[in-house]
Length: 147
Image (cartoon, rainbow, N blue to C red; front, side, top):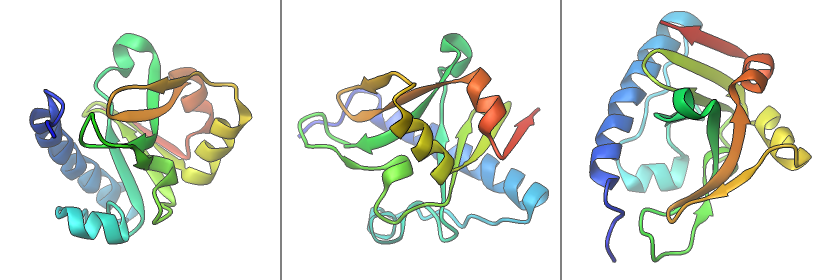
């Protein structure tokens, strides 16, 4: 089963972003996410020890929307499973952005937005989610940082 073409480079960028967010959260909110690196631990416990889900979004500046993930699969040919705000480990915080701007949301708030049906659903070969406009994100985020 082939991985999608940019999987490895995207993964490397995402890991670097996780370190940036971990540093920002540690210094700003005294939260140390302790991001898990192994697929085994991520499957069992979620992305981090503290229940923080971190996502890099490299396209929001061009599109004006954040992609809020609800399902994923590392392989295009495999069925997607709940992820992001619906990961089975129930993350309580969802952090998204890039190295210049990050938003912190409660996952409860994002689930309400998703269920509301106000936002466009999007499917790619390896992920599903919905688009949250930056304007709405600014009003519902628990915190926002800009470099």
